[in-house]
Length: 340
Image 1 (cartoon, rainbow, N blue to C red):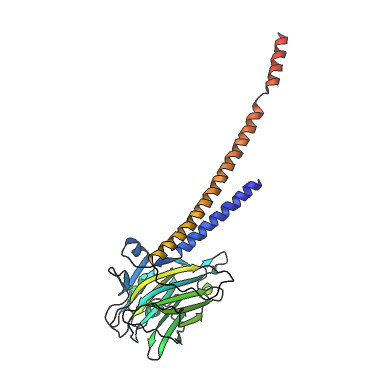
Image 2: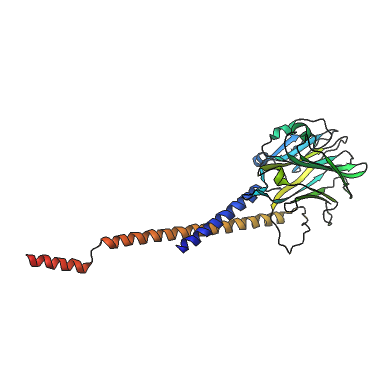
């Protein structure tokens, strides 16, 4: 019976590994380029003036007119909690965008509960902020959102946590150069550490070897805001008085596992993904899936074999109990012969 306990334990571990891999896969996404296909519309929702530019594989967030606004949301729910205690997990999201060097241009990152009707975000709002649609159409919902841009005084960030109708918007300023050359791109890395309950936002210009700088950070406890629920994430853009379009070139989101203690705490710097890196990343994921599938197959096959042997043994014992030994059969025949 100990062998069956071991096999059962291996089966349980293999099943949990498959469930964990599936959960991580469903809660992560990567768009190194945006392509018009049925899967794109199943996973991505566009609102306002945003549209897919097929010839450049990018999303145009705003039109080339003043007062334009556009939003893009990933429609599949993101699971930010695990275990029976519903502890929040760490995550990181990275996107590359371009917008003109105008003071009124802003871009925002938004997290809303999955129960919220996303079609509300297609409605217009009177605000010049990238978060204005939350203030008008999601007043009673719990959200985490912030926007950043350039003002006359320099870089700024506006943070919204909680219910828009009652939460206070926090204003931050940070030092650094967010100005982009014509046609240049800016990359943004957002990281949430569940242990410290802190969200950090960093920037890097295209082609720069420097780590994400400047940056700003703020405290937020996602476990208290969404008690065991699922969320959806999105990006929002507004060009204010500018008449230039904003573009989103790539976007990914990943659930992060705690790194080994010996690793440096500085985050790795994402770069523009090349074809070789895409193939390498896909190959690594496929290898892990193959290992999990092989392990599950071996465990299932071994358990099936052991069960078949066990049933065969039981049947053999039962057959031996009903068969008359040959010696006894001969003795009985002789005794019967003497009687006659």
